[in-house]
Image (cartoon, rainbow, N blue to C red; front, side, top):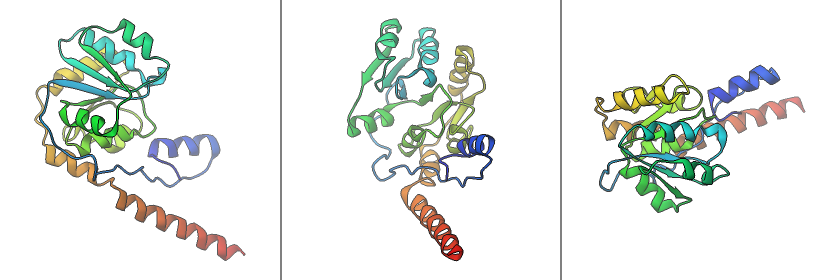
Length: 207
């Protein structure tokens, strides 16, 4: 079993095995639209090199928009030291503060390739669109021009182009929320229970 098609493809490539995909569930009961929209973009991520947070920091060095970054990691001090004044590092936050951050953001930005990326669904459950690199797990949870946008290259210029396009797209909070609800806990529980039962039956038949 794999948490995304991207990971299933990697399992097939390196192990020669077929894996069924079960996307991790988003807590759609907790992450819901609310609060007042504010004028900032958001990143929620561990601050490690492969997340490519520096790409977003450089993009916002060229813009006047505010960027808030939630998360901790070994890159925290280096990134904060080099960041412009419109980029704010919030560190680790509690669940309620995280939900409020999603609710108030203009969009969640995912600047690196993710195996899955539960933060994409948490944002969408709050009615917030996603701007993501167009590879990996984000392509399985974001619907382009409906619940978010993709940028095609891991460059600051590519992200800046997506941010420019974002200004002209009208997103619907209800549509974004409805997309996230497809990944809520009941669907995951039903799919995983059926998968386990099927594999258990196969095992029993071999005895």
